Length: 219
Image 1 (tube, helix red, strand yellow):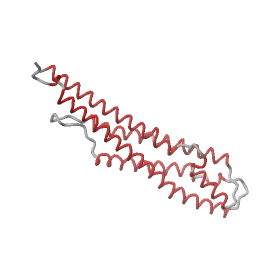
Image 2 (cartoon, one colour; image 1 turned 30 degrees about the vertical axis):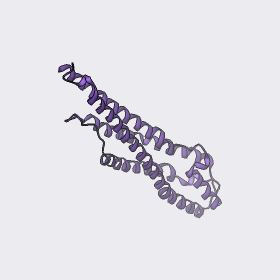
Image 3 (spheres, one colour; image 1 turned 45 degrees about the vertical axis):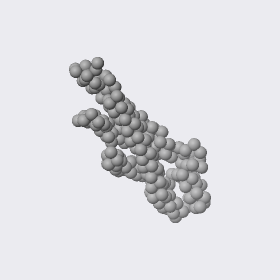
């Protein structure tokens, strides 16, 4: 009886550790691969929406851009915003792991479950933080010193018009599209994680019900 109890405890511990590993891998893939791909410099200049918008507005207003400053500043923005997302990455992992650590089966068929409501609650909190981070970095790196994007001698009215249009684009269209893209990445990874936990739980229950090692009446 004591031996069976120990085996069951070990099986439960292995199950919880396997779920934790799934969560950690899922979280890492979400931030390091998926979200970071949205924050870092695109592989092609034509995919760089911020740079493209600056060039479009410069052409529209016949402004000569300080391309050296533009390139350096855009990279600073991307490096900063990517780094700023690190606490969100850690927070999501911690909140998900809490659901595993707190799991204590009351019945033989009980398994670890992270409900859609739990995912929704976590994502609501993280979205709020993501919006703050994006907004702060936009203000600090993209909008704070717009005049530095231009060569000297540009007309003040032209600079003002350019600045208004660029600010409107960044604060509305760009901000909205970036947030929506991040939300989509999170949704896909949440679904993957949900299915991964379910599959691991099915294996756990299968071993529970089929393994002779868990029988108190082994012959």
